[in-house]
Length: 158
Image (cartoon, one colour):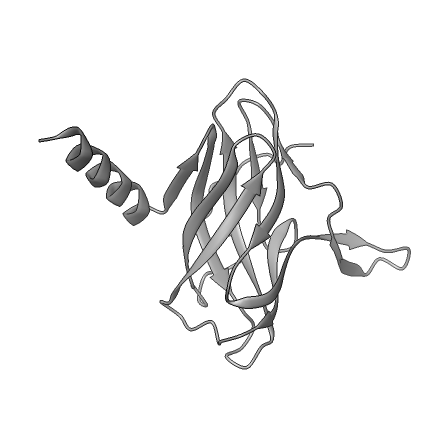
């Protein structure tokens, strides 16, 4: 088997197992969802793993499926109500560690969806890291996954 064939087979295997990699960053178990088929917003969740010896930061994301794509988190206000806010400065991924993007926490937000997110669809998402550069991930739409279902349990980075 040629090197090119071997590399293509390895890339296909990573795609089929829900894993993508760029530089020292690996994306594990990505999925996207929206509340309903007529929603104008949606979100993507995944675990970012930094296999390197230097901290990295997810600084932006983009996708053709939405007018805007932002990095968001949930913050509790003075009245104890959770509110979604855009993250300034990016999402750190510590060297040798991981950071979970999950429901109720940090996530990628799709605003102004140009199409419905239907269960089973696959949407392209480009993640932009400070050190590892750009990575395009094929994110499956999973409308049935429960908030903690099927995700790896990782401690979030600081």
